[in-house]
Image (tube, rainbow, N blue to C red; front, top):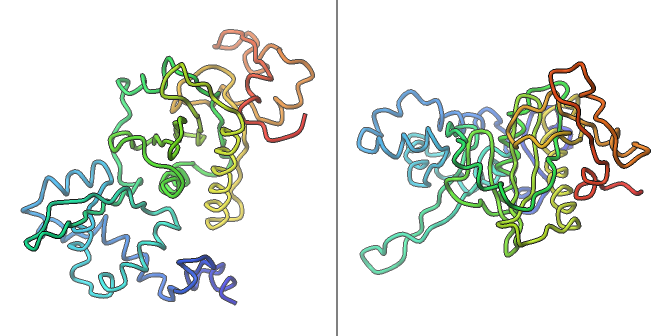
Length: 306
């Protein structure tokens, strides 16, 4: 019954540990909790003395627990139910708990903590060329692309970026941008990039330097986790969300548009020879003729059987 009511939009409910104990029966109340963070026209007045912090939030999507409490300060139900609202927002990919810092000691000597949340849809920070060196001159996989057929992928990208916080750590606080986010394995040597362009969500795994070799068993595990998140995101949004998994046939940089470079994984896997001319770029096209190597594209990502 709870699943049915959730599917028709009457309640918000997930049968998972940490969530199943609570049911949100007023969906609009929950929606307003998020809407108040980003659209409340009264924000200017209470933040006059903290303009810099507010500007940081509106440019980077990072917001402190204290600032969030100020925004919700006029609504006691949000403050008292914050421990329920935040986990649901995390589950839905609305926000992520980016980190919890130890702040200064208070008057009696106890250490205070300062929690920072990250809301990807707010981030306006551009990924500039100076950051490209992160994935240059290192061992890296081909780009795995989830090409969307019926929707612009940015909405799903924001939710995916937030959900990734539950599995991996951000590579650095300043490496979260409006169209790409970088993560790292907990206790491992692999870095993970999740990006978006007009048509695709892109995944690439790389190493900190060129001396550490990538392992395809780990990259396939990463793919499996991302696909699980994508399934959750798209199934809770609409049944008609369609996307196809594949690769970029040329060595374009992650975040670049891949409309003319997408090769479906099915097409690559069905090639009868390991090397052939790219079918997209046989002259006369505006792109130069080049080869695609089946094994190079499939080695790190392909989950099928040979």
